[in-house]
Length: 133
Image (cartoon, rainbow, N blue to C red; front, side, top):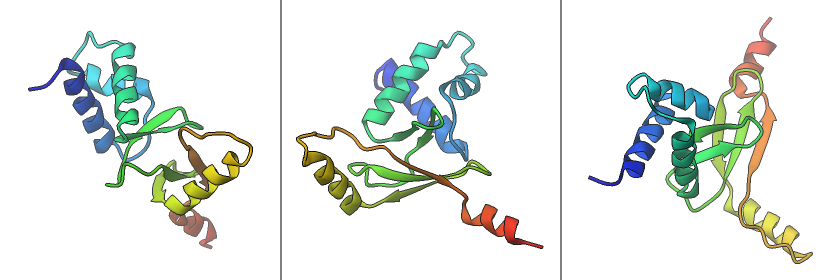
């Protein structure tokens, strides 16, 4: 069946997939504690770290939150567009942009190990709602 850690990762990923927006580790813990009263925060953090490492979950640095990866190309870093009004997050890929960022950083001898690209603004739905008379 798999290890206890793999089972917890699957449960954490399921919670994140069912939720429409980003969730904090404590929100994930709250959902899982409905069935597992003795669950502790370090267990959730370990599962989230493993899922992030495997490209199954994104950590939204600016929100200190997590969301399930919605694309199938886990080898590429995502560009996350975060709506400051409704909290929705759109996941986009642009391998060319990431290559360019690595190249720019590399000119000084810097060697990037990961990319985190978050863009804050207003989604199309919220922008359209604000434009209505």
